[in-house]
Image (cartoon, rainbow over all chains, first blue to last red; front, side, top):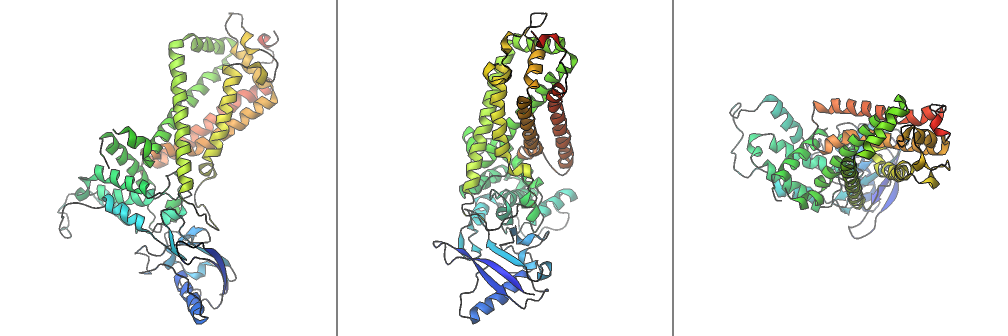
Length: 250
Length: 236
């Protein structure tokens, strides 16, 4: 496969970036998108040029490290798929592909396609935890939890924190991420105790980081590689309302 | 409850947006039900008009309440939009807004045009400013045989002007667009949605929005097609 890549190149957070075109040849359709970038980088290194910086880790769709917008869609727009699991067979020979980093004030670009997603870590630090030591994995059926509740908590816990929801949202809102984290803890008895404080603290931190607001467009849900549902945002709103009425302070 | 948190947090402002939106949505439903009485003839709609105008203790709190609600809706829209724009200082070179409906992306635009229409609509039928009604007739002097204000004649005269009716149709189309996103979104923002409710709310939103659109359009279209043209009250 031969392609034209239009890649965002930026040396540092301070310097302005720009789109640079790269002709790419000899791509095997079974390569993942990141493997294709590896091939491009080998070529750049051979020519003595600076390789394209991008984040990746597990390359099996479970770590949430890869974070690129491909042709205007976070992770490339393949349903329920991270960029590392997106294969080149989904593209056409001769196609022009635009590759950009996540765009959000809260996710400043560090270099090329790498952004600083520390804002998510600070939201988790604000309340995305259980304060008591709950020990190791509990024995099956030790804690009385309904099947429906545990399944729902697991659906929310599937969030890998990649930030595609922020990248795809027209407002760069982090509501889907925060709602998934709030929900998976509040649905289980270990996390339920602190639910009022948690939602207040996490939303307050989210606002501080400079994310936008949810306007219920559904873009986040559509691009989420773990297919987290918009219903969790409704749950967050509900829990936040209860917390507000109880007068909980952040 | 901390009022400060309500007015300053992202989710709090969305509560204000959704709650005021829901209140205005209810007003839009009641306003249509009231005005559809035009099809029951001059006597019925004029009696309804006289009833509203005669209950100052009801109409003024309602007007002041609506004004506050509209004010809060606009305030939260302006604040939220400014924050949303600031959240992405560097735009994408290529962006596709997956799943985001046209209505959901243009709420500010449809809302602003509806606001302009509301101002015109109030000047037209509430303050009855002759200069902007396009007929040259002073609506305040219209009286029926019971010496009540002739609302029926006012509506017929008002909507017989194709430009006025055209602006009305345009505004109702934008209201339809605004509500096609807003009705289901307000349930979401208030947290009143889950796996079971979501499909029910989505169907309710589509049905009620279409009912409102057809209902509101029926009045000017019927008048343009000749409804009420033989009514004696309009020739005086």
